[in-house]
Image (cartoon, rainbow, N blue to C red):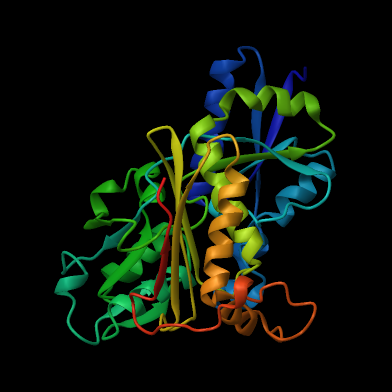
Length: 339
């Protein structure tokens, strides 16, 4: 077993908190192991004047960290699971997914207590296409604008009056000791979380089985099963970073319950699905829920957003079972399978 590990991490306040958290937990589990941090600035941190969907997606937050592992400068990287692409590059593996913090989205405002109090034309800021689509579907009278930057930058813009409210991940606020800034927590029914939201993933090289063995003690079985189901759903849809997709799994009565949605950018064509599955086969549940969404017609929306021709042979997003219709408005179509 190695005597020393280096964690590659972004240098944002939240990323450093996450890396130090894992550093401390590894120290507790492996006394004598020396764990240090390698701070790095990624492309995603450098480009702040464009939406992530236009510049390459959330994968921009992990590429430099993976390069550091390939170069031998670091042995692992700590990621927010919602920032990890659905398919890892060859030679990399997620060795552990830690216990989930609060996965919900948070409504933050200095003047209003919830969405219901926002007047028509109020400006709401968020960087997420997923959040934007859900807000537009449920609250068409609001103005939704892109909001980039780290957590403190986003809060500062709110405090300066640039926005009437902003939506952030509750987990990030709580981890930074900013839970008091949360005005209201949004239930999954109000705002379905991002795939992997609230969970941390520990990535290493596939060849470093010794490192993976050290990290395995931090893996949380329930969180891992939930996140694997969510990621399998998103991977099957192949929506990429251009499509509003939400997915949230939880354990109830010993089984997995997965809810998901796909929407166009305006929240008009909105598709929902939910199903239950076994804890020991989360990927099967994720694939099933994705198929339910495609059967409703979500494949056409995904094809349009990705720039693919929905009728082309190479398009794998054609609705299964011939579904082609869609419904307008926040309700959308909904598929629910009982446990």
